[in-house]
Length: 301
Image 1 (cartoon, rainbow, N blue to C red):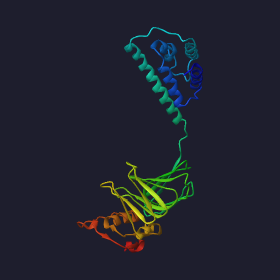
Image 2 (cartoon, helix red, strand yellow):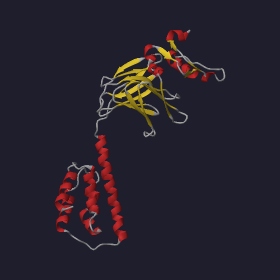
Image 3 (cartoon, rainbow, N blue to C red):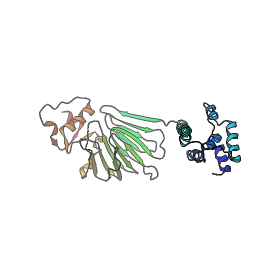
């Protein structure tokens, strides 16, 4: 790096206008000086010590650096061991400078404001999101989302919700839940992610991509009528296609879709809807699977 470039780079660092790459280039140029004497002439340790707590490089250090570059002062090289010792000090300074830059950069960013919507026991709540997409929460669920969407439209679900997403190819819509994340461009789909239950995603229209949170390479693309179940016991993504899957949002109409559900799963739904505790005392009864769609009133009888 010639002296003019070095001087320009120095000035940018002093004025806090240098990028991380330019800061790195500055210190790399210093590190490539031919001997310790030249390094100490440009970066004298005493003057670096004086900079602690100061927001800019000291004027005398700037003068010292530039004079050293233009005059090319030299001293006799020292032993390898003695040369490496001061370099460790400067390496620490480099790391502190770069880490400080990023801490300042992120600390100066305004914190994004979030909204969290809740639905109580037996409550179904409809939410209009910042992009006018609609999320409908099933009982005992919550959805966290930013007040304004940025490059991507990220929301965070606990429980169950049905989404009607506006199409926007430049800003993907991503539903984050406990074990999986579901990404769409524009579609309607149901995501169920209650504690201790296998998470499920069912697509009523359009196309979505579902990925494991711990391994995003493990994923599946779903289209209309597809239903994905994330098996908690082994982490497998099991996909099925059935016209009955299109009734996954029947809960929005106050109906319980019991097709292919175990009695334990139905009991969990009833507990969330009616704020009751159901104990299945008979051995093996929890695993029994039955079919049918029950209305709320009939299920109470």
